[in-house]
Length: 273
Image (cartoon, rainbow, N blue to C red; front, side):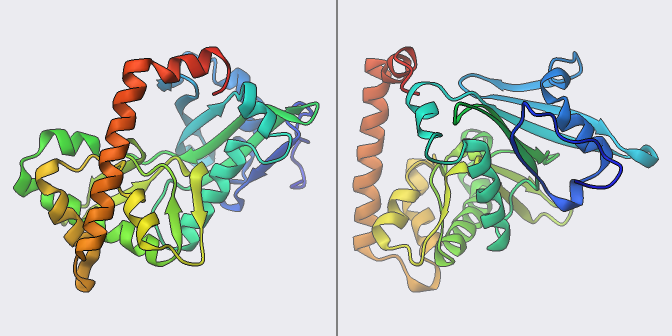
């Protein structure tokens, strides 16, 4: 514990704070996070199975910091799994650190805290610094002409390939988990979110690489071009393009099946998710 600061409340029995953010104002916010998130000035970004909110936290010297808080309330099988493993908040913390170590951009992790009851996680929070001025890449996929979209696809292909080459696999690489922003000089910057499914491997083979790309909503007319960008100097091999096409077709079929059968809705009712 930092000298002069209060002890953590017992109701949160596991936590970690990044050293650069370990200041009294952040600590005070985390100590009362449940009460703080009920205040009227809290911005709700997403409300569903997990709740995502944003707050602007005043710091000393007239400074402020924008935070994004992802709240996890595991149920059913998900809660049972936490008896034997880490919470999603703890995994998001580790995943963000893994991306940062590999030189891949993500929201700066601030802290995670979790509350356990009888060994399983009852509630957990992952807190990161908010990325201001960036939007989900799905906004570009649906609103840009092909010529304007190519620079974004090139940046996306190059960044994901660099991650794969370094053994980094984002298990939920989808349009909603990648933000894009443009610098003053026009350079496109990408940021990868939802880091609880980020993993490091010694080597990522072609099959895993191809499957990792299928959640990205690249327009059909630009998919071959995107794969060529991803291949880079090595050149796009026909076998890799076939792997991608088969995996993409199977994934799209699975999405149609889930929508038709309302599978996710039933899974939630049965507390499987």
